[in-house]
Image (cartoon, rainbow, N blue to C red; front, top):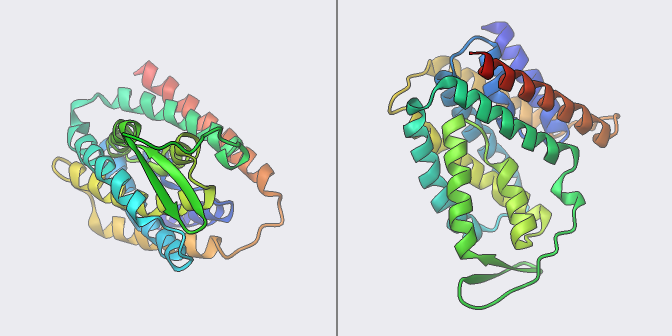
Length: 262
């Protein structure tokens, strides 16, 4: 168990150094360590809840969390996350691995070129179905007819596969609704922790985990995230993220090929 803890600590430190959440990495890492998909997803969701809450505490102090937006988006995300976790046993592990591989490729794209580098062409719209939000110095509009199905699907995939939904929620908030990057990232931290918690609840209906080991890993990634976020890397951030994106692609292709050969 010692070397598993060391691996998770190193991963959490390195990822937090460059601002990349570890939620998308936990399941592949646990699968590599010999856990079956159901156990890996359940433990991953527990860790996501811990790390998401850790990040949320930092952003809350800075006053960057849009609580009302989080409440609206997270309501349908949590319904999806619990449903995904509860229905995960109905899917073949090979299908889940292939689906996770595909989503890892999407995550690699956003790691290689973050949405913060893109200027979304989103105009402020008002009227039926649009919710205008004023937060601090910013104003943006949320298309309620779009946000409900999108957040449910994101939550379902997060709960089903044991991943952090933030890698998809942040692009949706920025590119679809024009939410400023720093507000989207901070608000996502709160939502990710809640999504993880509800997805975990769904998985626990049919999957048990070693709580002692899970708690140790939770403390490990929490500490790693706190330490990594306070360390300044000498390596250029863009180069580090490019390496992480390549690693994501390799893991994704391995999982897809491995699933197809089963």
